[in-house]
View 1 (cartoon, rainbow, N blue to C red):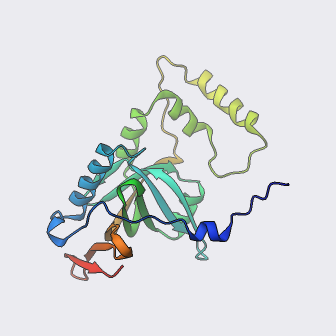
View 2 (cartoon, one colour):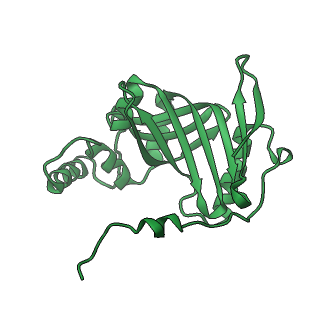
Amino acid sequence: MPYDPTPDPQHLAAMRRSYERGGLEEGDLAPTWSAMLARWLGDAEAGGIGEPNAMVVATADAEGRPSARTVLLKGLDEDGVTFFTNYGSDKGRDLATNPVASVLFPWHDLQRQVRLTGAVRKADAAASDAYFASRPYGSRIGASASPQSEVIPDRAALEAVEAQLRARHPDPPGDVPRPEHWGGYVVEPDSVEFWQGRRNRLHDRLRYRRGDDGAWVTERLAP
């Protein structure tokens, strides 16, 4: 009998689990969204979540066509969350014309997720320089070699550029300058939602939202 890769709709419909790990009450919230995110990030790390700082970043181009990808959180403070990438990538081009993003931390094993939405700006050059210099030698070479999101003829072409850069910037001393096309973005949220799964799909959703006066308020959303 030939293999049928099409999922069984009934099997997919039957995929469900009951969320029983706990709840989220207003009294559980930290004073600020960033402190709350830091707390949950610590819980994810302590709970053994693989790459707890992995987050899905969704952007949209000038026509509103969305795209999403996973990146790594590399900075967190009251201003926002920071990640680093190639400015010429798909997300970089989106953010150049539509500087708004949505971010999702999907911590499934903890039955939690966090969503942030807000404006995006480039990190200052000094911050990008400092983080680039902290990366492993191979990662710095890779960032310099890759024309991220561009069509390339084959992997050999990419590896040839990598080899040229390794010859130009040998290790040691491993001095690889940060390319101008690479750096950080800061997502400055105006809305941050903390979601905790609950029994019978009556989940807890508590949101920090910046009001028109700039002050943050907290509110509960229906599941």
